[in-house]
Amino acid sequence: MSEHSTSLPLVPAAARAGRLQQALGITFGVAIIVGNSVAVGILATPGEVAGYLSSVPLFLAAWVAGGLYALIGSIQLAELGCFVRRSGGQYVFARRALGPYSGFIVGWSDWLSTCGTNSAVTILIGHYLARIFPALLGSEQAIAVAFVLVFTAVQWRDIHAGRRAQEFTTLLKGVVYLFIIAACFLLGGSHRAEAQALPSSALAPESLSLAVAVVLAVQAVIYTYDGWSGPIYFSEEVKDPGREIPRATFAGVFSVMAIYVAFNLALVYILPLRTIAGDDFAIGKIARLFFGPRGDFALLAMIIVSLLSSVNSNTLMATRVLFAMSRDGLVSRRAAAVNAGGTPVQALIVSTAVAVAFIMMKELNALIEMLAYFFVANYAMSFLSLFVLRRKQPDAPRPYRAWGYPFTTGFALVGALAFLVGGIVADLKNTETPHHSSILALGLLVLSYPAYRLMRRPGYEQEGE
Image (cartoon, rainbow, N blue to C red; front, top):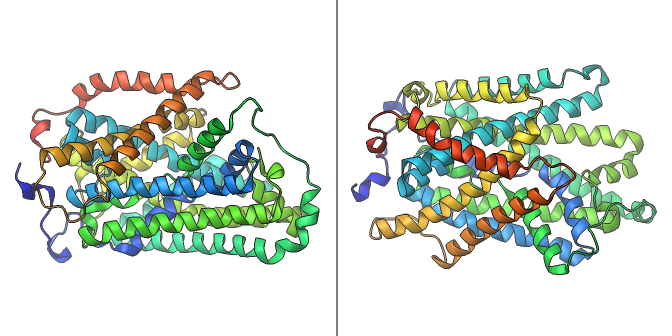
């Protein structure tokens, strides 16, 4: 493999009909991170974190610590995204560094997880709409399918439509959270005394040591930050990846940190931690303080608007993963077909079909919990890939090098492995809802090898280089 095989030639968009087009910039990169990261987790996780930590400084420090870990992880992926300039996300790195089978595991789990996340978000939109408009009760699945199809139609024409949709919906999300945060600080002062009288919620078991409580809280926060890998799914579609992927990654992570820290500052400005603890929708208490019973409806409407960017981003990313695997010869070549506008249309159709199928599943939440283990494992595979590629090609040109390598890379890898092990242990000890998602995930991992042998075509190892 030559040292130049990690990059693709720069070809004018007009000359590349039927191929991915270099049409994306830093604004899209920031939008894909913020749009994908800031979703349902920021609404529910403060209650979990407050359940572990009864100190406001520790509560806020956990959100800063989670953001710093996301930043360290993003530094590693920024180098990989600039070095291996092929769209497709973490699958591309694992395949290049660790081989076809490792790439297969990362690719199919990432693709299924992203499709499943898209389904879960659209179902939540359906539930929220049904709460606002009771006539829609019972139609949540149909609403979810409609949202998936709408964003599929938006992206069908060309990459520019998908880009504009991502940037616009993320702007709406930013406006929504800016409004919520500003309202808390501007209107909250007169309601703080009233908030003190609200009943307390569930707290963490007293048997937990402070160290364990801090670890569990930070782990929950880091999961909430997930989504900072967005730009690397589009590496060969970025106009100047060596320059714009790192800039978009850092700007995106800092933007998410600003939103998360400000949002939690707004919560504790009005509500005591004891009333936040254990509540998966603490911001709803503030809405009811401000606007009475109708506060929930106004808040739900704003949250629905803020979730639109998540639907668009997941649709975009799932399509790129399947496209990359198809282009490399793992699945049918049809999924690598790209229209004149730069959209992998067949991959878009199949990803949409899988998302719709997941919407119809009764056990979607259990599936998402199981696939969540692969999210963390995939990050670990990516950090390991950076070590491997640095060793295999030490002198290859790298437009961007991860700051602090190998120490920051090692820290990110150890952190990912620790979160993975901690999640498995917690799952096995969970007696209230014993899904044992970790065991099911391990079972899928075992079954992945025969599936890989069955699906790949002869010569797969040589394709896609």
